[in-house]
Length: 118
Image 1 (spheres, rainbow, N blue to C red):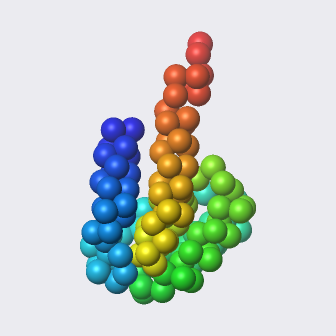
Image 2 (image 1 turned 45 degrees about the vertical axis):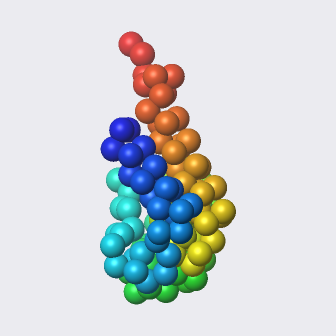
Image 3 (image 1 turned 180 degrees about the vertical axis):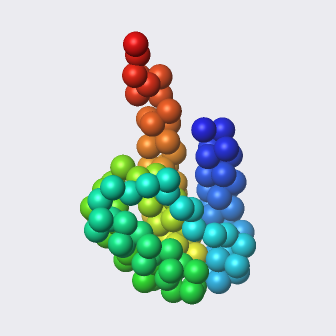
């Protein structure tokens, strides 16, 4: 979890301060890959979002990551990638919202209440 929090904090700081936007941003950042997506539609849109992001087609990436989020809003990597695509388009307020959602999902997944007892 510390790795994720540090990663998200660094990206959020860069986005909020305006250090990273546009194609220069994408040259330095790779989309995050999930460990697994069960929903096939979410998986399809996530993959298309990653492809668009890598081609600097951030508006297209945003559309696909939003579609993936609609199918399964519980995947932190979708929110991280959506935030990075939004940041690359200069939409820092929206990007910050998705960074926060990703952080919350990661914290929930690693919360002691989520670990089976027995």
